[in-house]
Image (cartoon, rainbow, N blue to C red; front, top):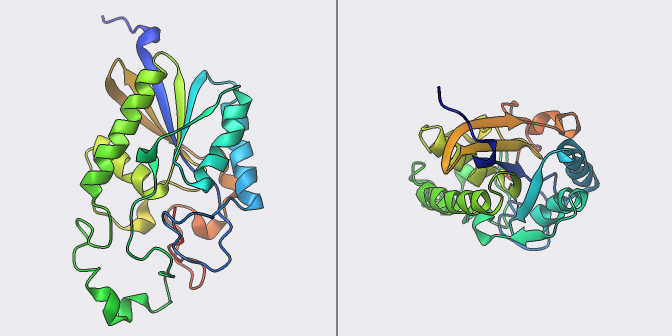
Length: 229
């Protein structure tokens, strides 16, 4: 029987940021200036409370404001500074700054067609492979920094889902509506030494997430735009 050395077990939580104030309904992507809404701040506080008793020794964030603001109460609860890792940033997207969602006619505009030819790469932005490489790098760095303890990394929906799909050996191309990565959710990677031995998922703030933004929710015209994640 093998004996598990708890000192060599490290837990890395990948957290999606909370709700963003986005009155114009644009896909904000990597644009600066998009901050958490009041509800988003409540989501961040809720997750901070959820993690308050955990052995968190390292908090890292994407450089974007919404991620930094989500990380703030978590870092504060553990008396930590927030480290910034550019590898946690949102995926690049050519539709950044535009509205692009259910019912807005974006798919009918000829100017957009050239960006939609290859959903397997995808052709409208950063490749899934590139996202895997950078996100795995960020995970490994956090694992090394928090070895034997826990780390929290605040990132964005698509990169989180892609790296989880890679670790769980699923295809990377997918239906965005099927991502299991709601606002303020935690995708948790447990390492034994340097090897990922399990992946978990939890939604500590699910009661605060509007129904139409939850995983698997039916698209609603005017409420399902790809605002960015």
